[in-house]
Length: 246
Figure 1 (cartoon, one colour):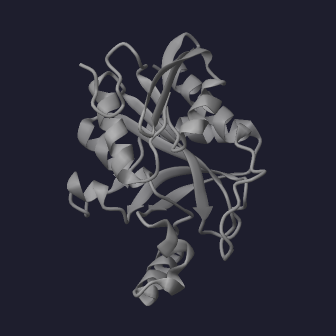
Figure 2 (tube, rainbow, N blue to C red):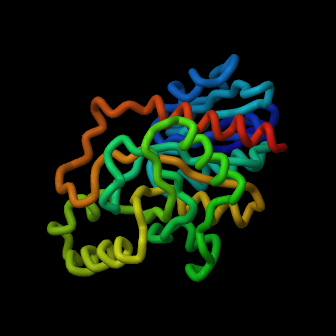
């Protein structure tokens, strides 16, 4: 059955799927696959399918945030996806996590709203252990600086970037300070929704991002001249490692 939002059906995707947010990045990642072909483009969901080590693998963009990520994940699982990896960008929350560093997200703070429609907030958003290990090993092999830890997944980009404009400025600043003191190392908008939905669906999920700024920076993140090559290569390498352990 053709899925409502991603407009794909069984047989058009692989069991393993990489999930960038930006549709343009789907094409970039597809360039790292063997024999990649364009199989779908509807709304924010741009999809390619190719192979890694002979194993069918797909790339499907999710757009920004939890709702569209969960929609893509649900519909991909309906037609055969069983391992899904978020691939994107994040903000740094820990000094030492610098612009251009790789960040493997092994768990997420559920500060978004989508996951609360799946499970109580007391249920943790945790990545699959095998997927996390594959991402860690791929990050190490890349030779780039890398980190592993907890991300904060939120819904509002501008309340993070410009809290002084918000009526709840004091609350926002207190929360961010608490998360930093508790050990969170990054911030983004998708992992918590993905991890919780994957747990409910009984599939595997993980996440790897590249940091676009440094902790304490007050300027808007600058994506220009930030190479994604290492991030994309590491995500594909992680899938190759997972394929060898099937």
